[in-house]
Image (cartoon, each protein chain N blue to C red):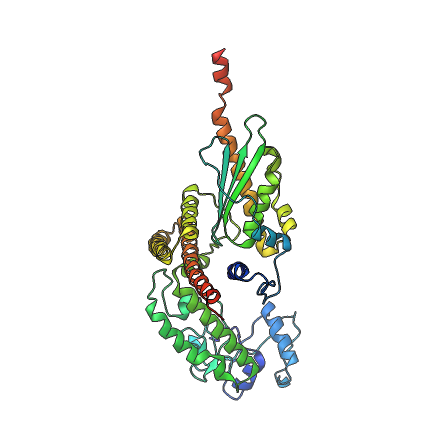
Length: 166
Length: 287
């Protein structure tokens, strides 16, 4: 993070001088992880109270990570049209949730429930010690879907009521 | 009359030390431990053959049981120094033999609280830890055993590392809490996902406040709030642990982890802030 700040500041001051980052250690993160960390997709927040928004809020207390993943559902089709996330944690956790938001867009809620943490981990080449980050992302997706479905269930009139109306 | 004694030290060492003195005989049947003892004996060149012992591992064997004058005090749990065979006194944890000043091998049954002579309680006198820690290192530190055998140098490295770990673990409330739960057989699971909305919303808001803080004063405010929360939750843990409500205790540990992490982020951001300032100064100054 310090490297990032230093780069950005030095970059604006004198464009040519330091093209190479201040690299001391060999890299251990897969380039996909670094990509998601440097260019995070879909960071942000939707309105929690919007009936078409499902919010999944999960945490990994052992490492102090929190992850919020939100999905926006299209009322008619029931598909996920947009997603955003906010994660406080390590690079792997951030990347995992970023990937999750990309993968859920355009899919139905049933479909995204089949996204497995192992797929996310494979895409990011996560080492064993970081596998729980991908698990957290999977749990976040499930929590968001659960919340969205609960809200949809509340909105729809129940079959009994419908029958009574007739 | 003759007490059965389980020999903790290699039998060859026993032969070396005790043979000249009086000894008493007892016979007992072999178990798996003696299989290893007897094989050790066979490999040792110092075994006196005149005792005519049958050392085949799987048959019933009669072994000499050596006992000193104070046979009555000995039982199967008495520890002896590997070097001089002096008994461990009950008063201090047996990391070091005061008789011959030899460092002992690590004994994992001596937990961290025992090392510091403390009761196994969450609330301890943290101030007293440093003095005891330094006293131990005066006896165990690897720098003191350069001239000794490789075995003892290994013991020194392991024992002194263990005492360092014990000191660090017991000094901080969170690590102490996790450790004391582990002694009760409860591991705060690394991989567990929590979804308590109240706690997570609170933590989310705190972390957002830390990220969005504009100056170090705001960060210090958040940090002092975190330290307050840490103390409160530490008290809740002590309470829950005392009542043996281990589920509640685990929840307290989870909260403490989050507050500690948030507090750490405040420190990081303060450092980042001042570093950013210095870099900006560097850039604007003429080189």
